[in-house]
Amino acid sequence: MTRRLLVSIHDVGPRFEAEVDLLLERLTRRVPVDRIAMLVVPDHWGEHPIAPGTPFAARLRGWSDMGITMFAHGWYHKDMADHRDGLARFKARHMTAGEGEFLGIDEAAALQRMADGRALIEDIIGRPVAGFVAPAWLYGKGAMAALRASGFALAEDHMKLWQAGSGRVLARGPVITWASRSRERIASSLFAARILPYLLRFARVVRLAVHPGDVRVPALLLSIDDALRRLVRTHRPARYGDLLPRDETVLAHTHLPAQL
Image 1 (cartoon, rainbow, N blue to C red):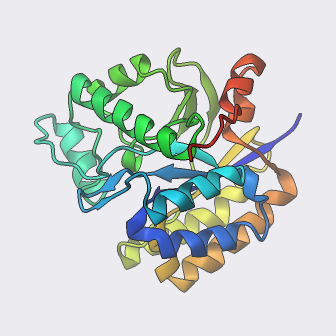
Image 2: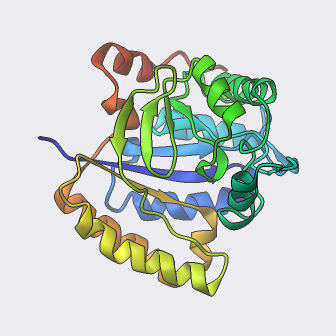
């Protein structure tokens, strides 16, 4: 059995261009560039839009041309909903810094943002995106309904990766990731990153995700290096699309002519 390692950079956009460069350089020390995924935010917090024809759009297409897998990652990456449900309110307050964009919006709004994000990214890179990942891995009922109708091939949350249309689960297990918002979160993520590579050493699929904020904390960067060093001993870096059935894998890896 081939054990696979899926590696991703979250929150890719103009706001964090320098941080993305640093993370990409760090990851490619141990992972081939065409085995890395980027989660792209079209307009981070409504203040950093990606527009066709801009220098950042050219960089995004360049990364895609290098073989990097692209996902749509929300639209704003900002939670602007009024959460009336107690569980959703708890998730919004304690599981993310106000960035659970798809936790409280209805199906129509979620579907529109998914479609808009997909259209923008695909227009820029000239090929299909691999799927959709909600900011902070948080999905409300409306987002889940929209996802089933969206036409995306893949979706993931913190505990699983699945086919968006059918709901068929392709991999289970926690994402190895890091938090930089507070000393407590830094400490807990460092602890998790120490033990999870060992606990997941026999897992069929392991996912590792990094964020722009990680570059501001030297201890997190060292932990990322250590986790990757250990994981590549037990798991082969792979593309997300490698988990799809063969006919759908071909579609996910199709490279359309890049738009000039």
